[in-house]
Length: 92
Image 1: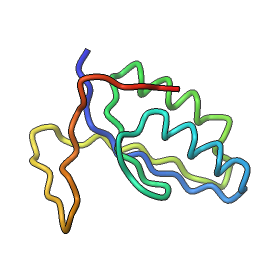
Image 2: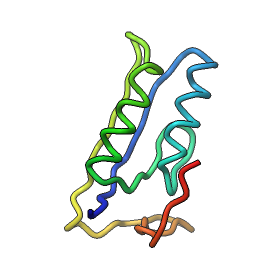
Image 3: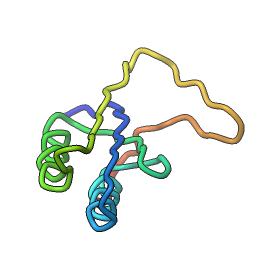
């Protein structure tokens, strides 16, 4: 199954749940910083990430997952590297 690039961002106020959100999303991320991450996901992986984040995100908090158009070429600034779908992932 083919992976597509998604930007996953969250806004969590509780420090414990913030750490849980970071660890959950970093399991799927190949890049990013703070609370915005680049994740190459299949449809099944996207569903698993959403299920994993459901108990972490509170009522007044936000989870944003944006699928990027694979036809667009990425533009990077400075020393940034363009996102790339690696041949394998380690989720653990």
